[in-house]
Image (cartoon, rainbow, N blue to C red):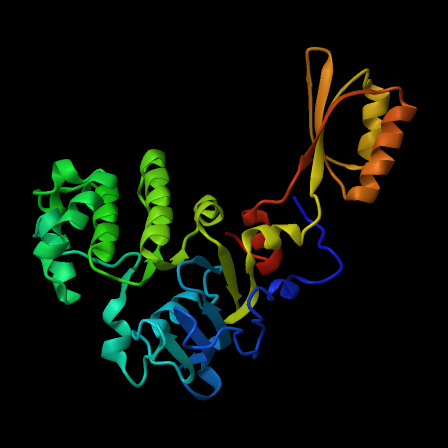
Length: 344
């Protein structure tokens, strides 16, 4: 359902931390857990060059969860890989925990880990527990010293009963949880999570969301989360950054981003609405749904505030008695589609 914006464009939402195309992030590299300034990357050369990322800038406050969103081809993957050192950007700066990744990559990535979609983040021949010990050791920790943390992760993610099974013997959803546990097994300060709930059932997904929130609060963990599941983004993230055509097109809290869109419509339950009134309403308003039940009518109408007042006047003129009026607010998926013109 189409949504009307307030007196501005979607680009006006890029004000949460002072970020805009070409603008410096409001936080300094020393203040931010993640600082990106002027990031650009092209693939190919000459007339065949493809600009995957163009002048992307933002900063992430420590201890927060930020959703990084974008339709396919928006530059999201290139941006993440540039931040992780898997792709060398043509221009721009990236700081992790105040450390310039181009000058001190080993130190910068020392407390950073990532769970990338489609990648085999774990060793499938090892058991679940062995993977946690291995990856915490790779991060420079003594696995025995953090064994309690590993046991807690196994319990929270419902992996304790399979802790001594080889990862290759687990279901896809279980493997997904092992990947997340391996990322969190060490003392990381910044975690990049790409589609962390992919393959999980509803209960496991809710468990993961709760655990992420707890870890962020207890550890001061900073999370950059990418997902096509807007319920996950809306539930977990403090803020969202949306990329499109290689640029930042929105950067704001979820609440403020949704607040930049007007009410998208109304659900009305009414009595005494006959065929004549229905025809008149359909000719004047965008009636998206119309159901009759138990002598009443429930309909959804796409309307802004001005159209809503005209609608109530029309209902009154036809002698229609209103039982209930519900506001249909835009959700994050609808906001995303409106901003990018694509699919979530």
